[in-house]
Image (cartoon, rainbow, N blue to C red):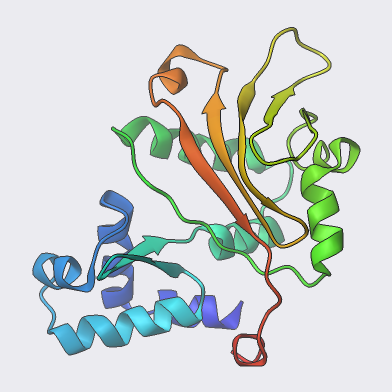
Length: 207
């Protein structure tokens, strides 16, 4: 958590996060053109943000794309925002969703200190998963090419559905994803969700 606060303390790094918030998945060159910084300066600040896990990267061909990872900020939120303050904080989240337009690619990342087997069970076991998905039950046989679907025991109909594209227990699960809970969400079409379950290296753990 100290690394998150150090990263956010610099206004230049906050500008980088703002630029990625407005348009996620940018290259180093694109960020350099948007901000009054040298290429070296952008690289230096991005390195600090990556070390704090506020920015994660993804290779696409020859390009290296940068994405905002909101999970560390959410962990800060959870530490000091009580259940009574949560509705007020949620108002800001609603504002974020209302202001974002179009379909955007998002890459989120979090490290969990557990075994791949336990994490796989948390993802695929309906009783365990519903604790983290607002009571929604997700069912599937978790085989490549098979269907999965999710719904609430308290409401009729499905809330989401998709296909298991890649299944390699307990290391990797790639799924298509289609939300069914509103017309505005349906218009976004089918997206792709990848769960990459990998042990943390000694280098990453020491950061």
